[in-house]
Amino acid sequence: MKSLARQLDWGVAKLDALEIMLQQLVWIDISDSQILEAYGEIDHASRKAGRVIGKNDVWIAATARVSGATLLTTDLDFEHLHGTWIDRIWIDPNIGKTP
Image 1: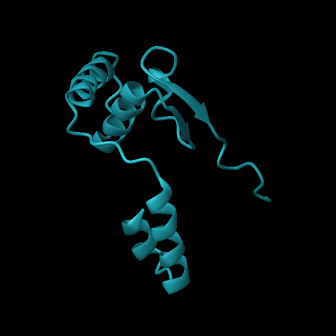
Image 2: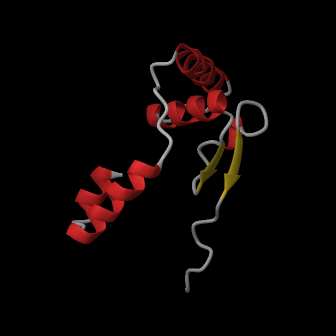
């Protein structure tokens, strides 16, 4: 998030708002043994299914699986994991956009 904020050249007010929001989030340590195990399982299952996903997406999926969180996403990278490995809600990024 901080990288994207820098790429978009956010001003001080937006950066401050981001910091406030980040302080309100629940943080999960990805070095937890259950998350590391889920990472290996999800990465292997994805490759076996012919679906190589980005390493950050594997971390996200592993964390969602172990924490029991429902993953909200605007891309389809997690589609093959839905229902078996994670619960995910896909949000169409084009909703609300005018042509």
